[in-house]
Length: 180
Image (tube, rainbow, N blue to C red; front, side, top):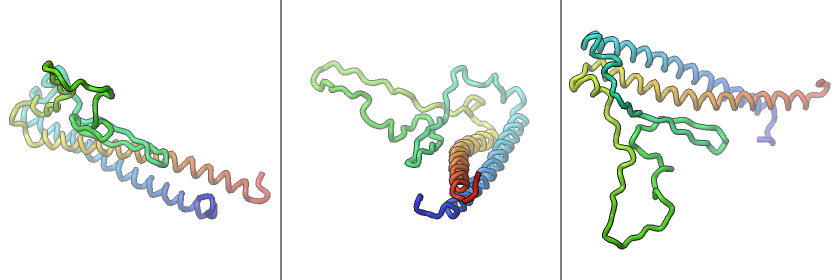
């Protein structure tokens, strides 16, 4: 990258930053649409089932998360976020649980408890036959979560691009003759 013309490098970085900003704006609009759609579907479900049938009183006493946010660092040092359904393992988690030798002979064997059973679908809190609008609300909010993770990754990339852009601008000011 150092061998390239600093002005051409600045132009390509600026184009990338503008493209990322445009993508972020599109994702924000999509997130707003998903959240709005989710709340509208939730209000339709309340209308269909009754106001008291869809509310905090139907929540489970012990809630389990359906998804979790995972992060990783790419080769260029930028963090990336993504959503993983609860109960699934990411590649870093697959493998032996202990780094010790195990005794293979012997009659006593204790089964290892399952660390986390698959979480129950929260729609079951509201009954067996829930309205389609409640399922639509759940799907809209799940899509919104995925968009939020994508937006966080994109925002980190935009911040990195801005800092790179400012560094190149300072470098160009120093290279120009007559610069203070």
